[in-house]
Image (tube, rainbow, N blue to C red; front, side):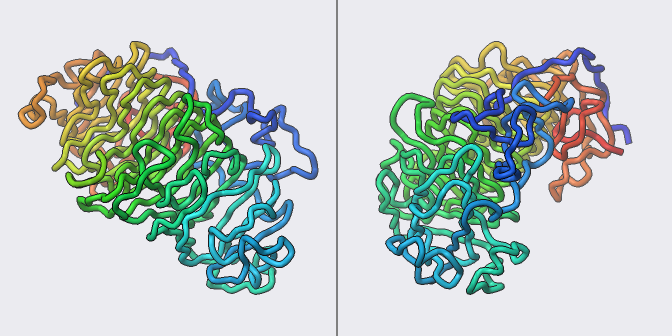
Length: 533
């Protein structure tokens, strides 16, 4: 079947914009190499294989961007665990406590620390591994140690294939199961944390150079409870979070936290897929004033009043994550957003999947710098509300690079929600996106071209919206094209690969020249997926 009705050919001149990743030098803020295999980061025999997966560093391959980001598929899951330093153990109900000596607790499964808030962090040194047994833990906690650039601390859910951990005294096969940590009684008493926080980095340098690994999808679940009346201490609005990183005071980018990786961690608020009334203003994840090299990869963010609240931060990447179930009821403590975004710079959302949200997707509400949104799939919003994908509201924001995203069934409001004033900077761009059965509001998109669309609802959806944006993508863009009514392999089951190719979009260069599956964009197919016969 012919996918297109009409399309223009692409420009052959590649255009390279930077990516919102980490320091182009490949070094952390302490001068240590973050990716030991990178050129200029030769490892010693002691440190070989212990560096965490990182978006930092230079690269010699053809896909490397100006920051060294390859963007190729999900980030690596890190080196072998338990291979350097000491191993420590946490198992629900075990007898170890945070006041126990480092020789009498946490050294085996038999004397493991029995709750998350009972970890004696003074025992944990750079290069050590903290093994988490599966089970349900009930106390909020704060991280109390840091690694170094060459010897991060690993906190990992244990698997039955982990030879060293399995050989420790007291091993039980049941430990190889999901790690669930909740805080239903607002019991986080750590200084600088909100009482309802599950995991907190409590305004200190503790937690830097740490790698938190669920090992499998949702291998670690951190979930807030729906508790009324929580007063925030770490932010002016958010009262609790499944993970709370950074400090809520001081100038943007002047916080204490940096060099933190989360892989296969599920960050959850209390809500499910339906409309939900949040009794306190909660977030699945809160990231405040971090200073760089913070990576969330293969993670989930869902069920929060805000799924992510990120403010005053730089050098943060959300990679191959899932954002969903953000349908806050009218009686909730706060306004719902998939991402509340304020005063950030050099932040990337790449190769993520987004669905079931009722208001804003990425809501930029204070002046912000560079924002990179590419290779994402936004689909099936709660169109009974007023969902949008992205908005710069009453502020100057950007540049925004909005490249090769697929947007399907976002019709409750606009993909590009119109700002009441100001908006995206003049050097912002939207290129090579695919809009299907959605209201784009292309007049609010930044310098858009080379997009594909089907059933742009701009001309028919305005009575609900109360706005006058009626221009469609096909009318607005010189090199726009239209696609058929059935361009996807299986839209109903969430498979947004294409059944046939589009004419080439614009070559915007590396690191955008790889798609969500890691395929090289040989033809610059429009949308998140490069077409492969």
